[in-house]
Length: 221
Image (cartoon, rainbow, N blue to C red; front, side):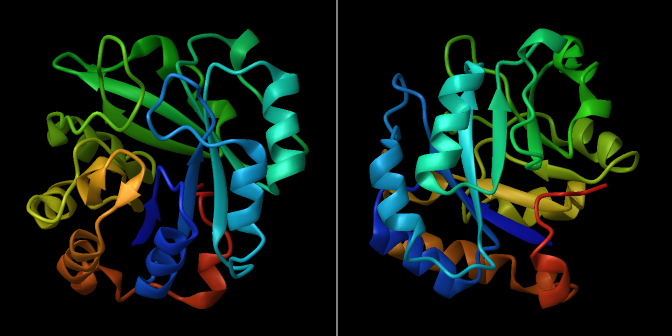
């Protein structure tokens, strides 16, 4: 099982996550997010990271030019799209992998986004929130994710933390997990103790992790 630590804004947090075994780091490029980071600041962190770590740009319904500029300046090697509900808003940039984030509520996966699944290289399931996209600390009914994971490998997100991660993984059996607020001291600032606890809790689920596979994260097809 792979691990993505999202909402990175500090080099120290990126380095600790890498040391603990993260496969990917997420950088949020959305002004309304408390974890927003500039292209230049992200680049300063990314240039110091090992090449095997996936550097994923997280966007909310971005314009092509904005996302392409982030890829160019920051040195991203994958993009993650939130708030995408139609073909016209789905982006592919420089043939980089595209992760499609789909909100899940009490009725299941958002059908508008789910229609775009064939276009995506990987799918991330996150808890629905009326005004926010990711990093909300909310969980959702993991049975929806478990059902979908039997059809397609998924990245599980949404309110994950050291206290619930083991139960989440046992229920869903995801290809990867994505955590942000659950390992923070404050928005954009990771808590070293929580990060260490998180990785400790999932240690037993990472036995299938091989170096030759890691480089392909987040492609799950």
